[in-house]
Amino acid sequence: MPRPVFGIQVVTIGISDNTRQMPMLPIPAFVALVLGYLALRSFLSGRRPLLVAFLAACAVQSGLVTLVGGYGLDVLRPILPVSATLIPPLAWITFQDALVRRLSPRAMAFHGAAPAFTLFCRVFAPETTDVVVPLVFAGYGIAILAQLRGTSDMPLARLEAERVPAVIWQVLGWALNVSAISDVLIAIAFATGHAGWAGWMITASYSLVLLFVGMLSGSPSAAGAEGPERDAAPDAAAPPRETQQEDVEIVARLEAFLRREPLHLDPNLTLARLARRLHLPEKRLSTAVNRATGNNVSRYINSWRIRHACTLIDAGASVTEAMLDSGFNTKSNFNRAFLRETGLAPSQWRVRAREDAKVTPIAQVGTPP
Image (tube, rainbow, N blue to C red; front, side, top):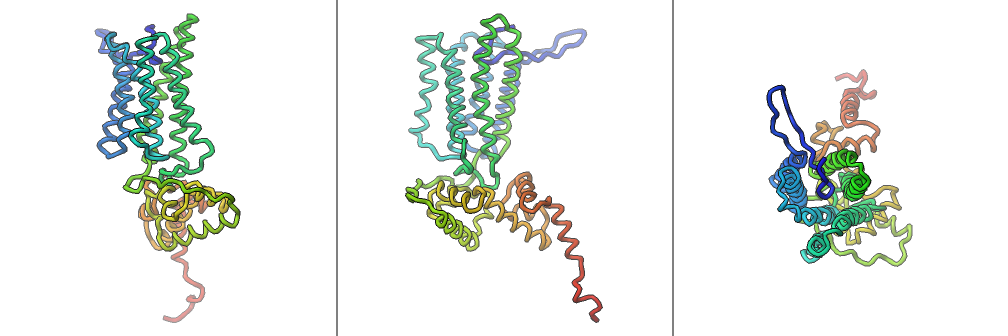
C-alpha cells in the first residue's frame, strides 16, 4: 500500500473482465472531477466568487494528489503541503463572506500567512510539515466552530433558512478537524506498522470531503443572501443597560415597521439589512427579539411569512404561489416553517381551506333567492 500524501491515500477504482484489465481511476481523480464540476456549476450560476475559489482549490488539491500518488509525478510532491494549507483559510474567508461580514482585501491577505509559513517549513524544515498541516486544518476548523457557537442568527444569512446555514458550516468546521485528526492517526498507523488501517481512514476522509463540499455547494442558504445590500453597517454601541421594557419596545418598532413596509416578503432579507433599516446594532436586535418573543430573528420573521402564506392559500393561491410570494425560495424551508407554525403541512392547510369555502353559512340556509 502506498504511503499517504498529506492525509490522502491514492486508492484506485478498477473495472476488469476475464480478458483484459480496464484503465484504473484513482479516487482522488474522481474527487477532483466532482469538485471541478461543482466549482464550474457555482461559477455559471453566479454564486459567490470566494465559494467558487474554495471549491476550485479543493479540486486542484485532489488533482495534484492524483498526479503525484497515482501517476508518479514526484516533482510536484513539494507543492502538496503548501497547496493543502490554502484550503482551510479559503474555507474561513468564504464562511465570513457568506454569513458574518465582508472581509477587506487586507484582511484576506492576512490569511495567506498559513500557506506562506508552510512553504517556509517545507524549504527549511521539511520534517515539521507533518505537524504544521494538521495544525492549520484544526486551527481554522476550531475557529469556524467557535464563531458559530452560541450564535442564533448569522448577520448575512437568509432569514428564511433559519439554522440551515449554520449547520452546514458546522459540518465543514468539523470536517476540517476530522481531516487534521485523520492525518495524525494515519501517521501513527504507519509508525506502528498498521498501514492497512490507513486506507480505510483515508477513504472515509474522502467521503467526508465529498459530503460537506456537496452540501456547501448545493445549498443556496450556505452562500448567504444575494443582492447589493449584503454589507452590514458597523455595529453601534449597545446601551449600557438593556431592560425588558427596551426589548419590548424594539419588537414593537419591528412589528410596526413590517406592517408599514413588508420587508419580510423579500427572500434575501438578512439580519444585517433588517437591523440597518431599524437603525439598531445587529446583536441588539437579535437579543431583543430573542428575549421578548422566545424566538430568534429567523423564526420570528418566518412566522410573519407563514401568516401571509396562510392568507394567500385561504384566498385560493396554490402552495407554490404562496411560498414564493411570502419570501421563501426553497420548499423544504417553507414546509418546515409552515408545519411548525400551523401544525399542518401546506397541502393539508389548502385542503382545509377549500373545505371551509364549501360550507354554506347557517344564516343562508333556507333563505329564498
